[in-house]
Length: 248
Length: 137
Image 1 (cartoon, rainbow over the protein chains, first blue to last red):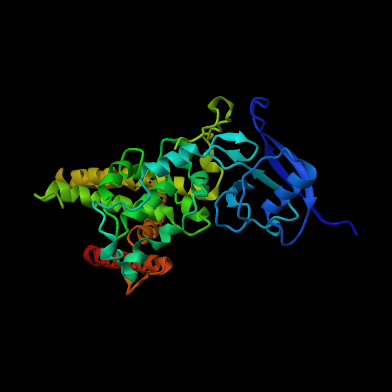
Image 2 (image 1 turned 90 degrees about the vertical axis):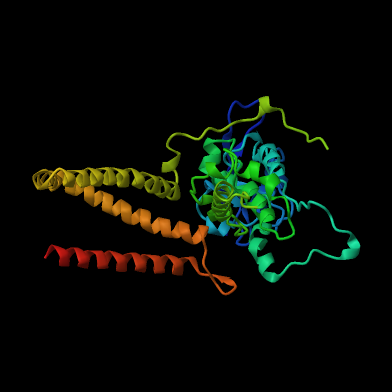
């Protein structure tokens, strides 16, 4: 009996040669336990070695293999062929990002934005090691833990129409990570992140479509982080206006 | 550390078509939520005019409410009511995300939060309806 197969339509774009991306069909063996990334690896190894895409861990940790699968942002290491079979599967580069080649997008815009929110613990002054660790209660950890799960896969950017329409928008993951450090009881860098997060291209660009949280493979819920940041910044603004000591 | 940037002239840039909001159900529902505010704004403007007519005396008010009872206005009000209902429910969903309630150490399940709010809305609406009918009678 002939081995079952599945067809993948994969974006091809050769910089300097193609004026626009095109879809190329590949037929690969269908296996119940294969994910889309396995099928791409099969194409690369057995059919067409010129196909370019990013991947690394194959286990939903590194965040490298994000692509559009049938128009939905997915980690291809977690998108099983069996969920699409026997229909053909369209694999495209992440939406809203410039394409470098085939399925590889240019992520430098995201990396710049991520850096701009200073996603690390900022202290006004470090205490000496001899004084011990910065202790935290379970409740203090709970306040930001969910937002630490972000793997920078950029699926949320590909799902966000605001980012698609306004590329200057800081975007879901960068804001969620800025919020994560703002909520960390050990951090003292809120004042440094504030001007970036609450700028015109920051949280106020978000119209709360909510799709970022829907596609997040780690349940980070960036939409919640953005809306809660809006509440925090609004409260701080009122305090700074109404209270004589500026809410400090 | 310097970061190697790809040659921008060789990148391909996609543009979102104006019909992007028709490409996904969730985008369409989002646009409906946005659109609902237009109908609610129209309703509120009409309501303000209605209040203004009160200051002009019973005849002016009666003439204005007579106009509002035409089929066109009733259809518009019905559409506005459905949009207001949709906006309220999506608002409760948004509130559950923005201002989650905590029960002890755990966040209240979002669906429970929405159900409680919808219940409260129904009770308040019912009370207003009863009061309205009682005062009218």
